[in-house]
Length: 594
Image (cartoon, rainbow, N blue to C red; front, top):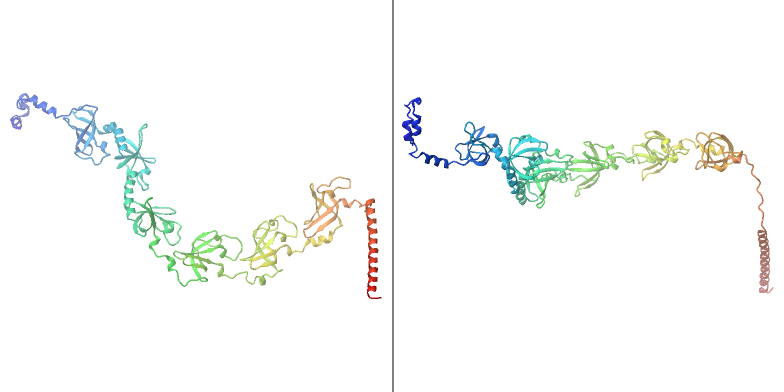
């Protein structure tokens, strides 16, 4: 065919003089043009606008993808339509939608996006039912996750489903493609949820099985610090996580695992335990170093002094680190000789350097108790010589209770002033007399050296005012005083600023029959005085009523008869006894032959 065309297409022929009509009529097809055209038409696909057909990629540029669908001309789709598939290459098959078989320029117009949209829901359901892995193009970030293009449908990728590791920056995934698994479909609203984490977890599960099958307790493995919590550290062992509990991070006491490790740090750990069924692995870091109790000085014994740093303070005591990993407990009762209940925070702080004495030492049990007060003199030694009974001392009020006051003579020496020994007058609560922190003068009343207890008195500093009251207000004394208050039981009478008396209700009535009122001054007679309990009972009635002479009690006739009979019986008894005595004497004389 080319040989027949050459003469017509000779370069020596000028274009404007070329006989196009002769060329068109020339038998360039071997005399059967219609047959050739028919044969050519048979090689072309029957393309119908609005259909989805399968094509082959014949060319790729930055802006366009050229696709052949077996038509007389190739079609073009825009490159952004296949950005979800960056691996697309020449020769790959691709579905397209025929929008127009020929535009104004004679170009075949195709759309891959529309083809995907038409078949997308069927493809999504097919992938979901077959548990297939699909590719998704991450379009943008949204609240709580990402929007992903899957088969032309916008699916939601939750942030928690991106990876097994916590993701802090979602933006790095935008404009990228990712292998996904469809995990949820809502046909009614055509909502699709996808997950990349599900694929990773499946892969990790397989790795876990392989790793767990090769693990042995005591084995040392390398891992990467994956997460740090307040109770321990999670370490990635290459697809499976293990936990180092905070107590297995160091032989010494630590407050935060970050003191020992940091995120993404490569560390060697020891397998302490593992459960192949549950996939749990226990790890240890401190086990890679010797047990510090083995390094403790073998010559240390009870009674020795040691120095250390306070690593923990609780209400009941403080833990002191003697050497790294070896601690001793100083109980709060061993911090001071003071008997007062206090907390350890009053004495020590974390980080403080202290000196103490070893009280108990258990190397096998890895326990040690320490004491601080043993390094200072016991203030209770020779306490009677320092504070003799009856001596007056100055003390500081440290605590006030309902039953009395605890006063401190010196550090470690406290005594109780009972409420009855605070004042000669009756009080309801010790706070009426003193406040915490006040300095008061006391008298030493008694000791309990073994129990470190001391009895103190405060009222004994002053003379007992009831000695004078006992003299001035003896029973029968009549005096005038104001009525302080009146109630159903009686009235309270004010004798002086510190002393009151009580008048019973039946002894309150005035001579005119009326009852006294508060503030009224009347005369009273003392009817009873009890110095020990500080109580005076008085009567107003007895100040004006003259007592009647005691009348002889009349004797009834029956009682008179009874007395007479008793007297007669007494006389008879005496006579009978006398006769018996005479007869006995006579018998004796006869027996002696007189």
